[in-house]
Image 1 (cartoon, one colour):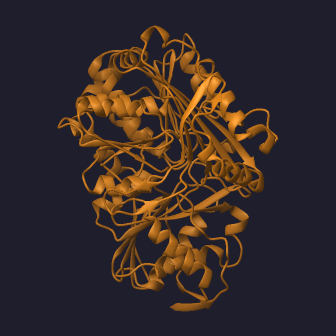
Image 2 (cartoon, one colour):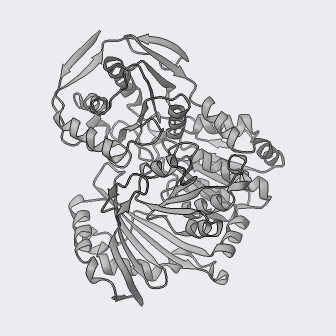
Image 3 (cartoon, helix red, strand yellow):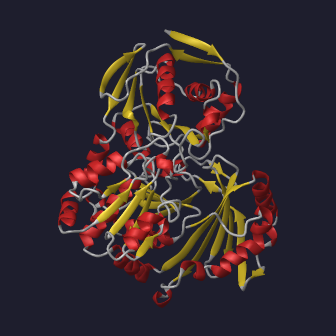
Length: 542
């Protein structure tokens, strides 16, 4: 029943910040997916007879690769596989199931917020026994194995019925198809005051939750409508579709603009939220205000004790380096640790496991806590609902009062998507070479105080991660950051982050792009974004 299949290596299977992501036709190449899955197992030790969790976001090619992964897991000696019904398992739910059932690890099939379809994006990533993304040392080992692979092992088994909950045998390995929502919903009920949320909805409070035809649809439907009593229709686009309905499942002001416009309208709901392809990102919108991800992390931290699961207080906060420093001011007031890491949720894992932090966040619409080892979109939405219920105030009032207390961090991200890789790399290389000459220079009335290429020294294991983003800090606390993103599949995405701190409450009502105009212009003067990319404006402004 077990076959050893000869194969040839591919040289492009280097995992990015969240696994290996390519276009579907690439994964459909002969043995491409099989090679990578076998390379994962070849990089691991001690999994014989152990449990492996498998699931995905329901995107195109999800079902086919699940069948391959089950057969290869059986051939390599795993004792059991747990797979979400229909192949569905949100990334945070997968993390929880790995932790709850003490699995050896998990394979998550997703390209996160990227589009799905026959010619769109697909991805495979491995999560370790703590429920978090594989650390860099493991992803490096997987890449090394993928470049030298000569064979893979696969069980000749019948196609597994992943649509029926139950248990079957596959070449001596047990395959259990589970309800993808139940365990996760029970965890949320432990963390948040569901009785208070039921009262909130019963009072006439209206919200809209857009799952963007992606994985959180069944989770939102069960938790918000079935368990909390939100009105029927609260959950929108809640059926996961292989192509996400032809839309881009990225919860931001471009791709979730219809939700934003609805909440801002006079007759729209009081509160809106959206989640992405695999359920780990979130967007939060209140009547009259868009809550930036950086502010969301800070406000959740400042109000954490209002949720039962965090009533004891928080141990600390971690944020990715490009994320605004709004949470830093909360950490300072609370007297807890504040950690600045590279982009990529895997960097939070050590801090969470060591008990140094409770809350984590990224400016790219990712927020989470120590309940799992991934960012968690629906968790963040439920936390906001808990805060709204406990304080009895609108989202706009909560945000403006937070700014009055801590000051406002004007912040924006400009994405230049699908830039030719050579041009993007040239921009970064040229800027990196000039960093030493920038301090003291005046640009657009701003004086450069410091310029560096961010390096992270992990306080838990001592590892060092270099070249994690170029930082240019100006006198007075403003800054710009430039980095290339590792989450796309075509060309390169150049991200520009711009931030200005404003403590004066009388100046908190300025339009964000207006408040940052001189910094945005300075970034182009210093980095030559237009001349390198040929773009007059970014693809997306957040």
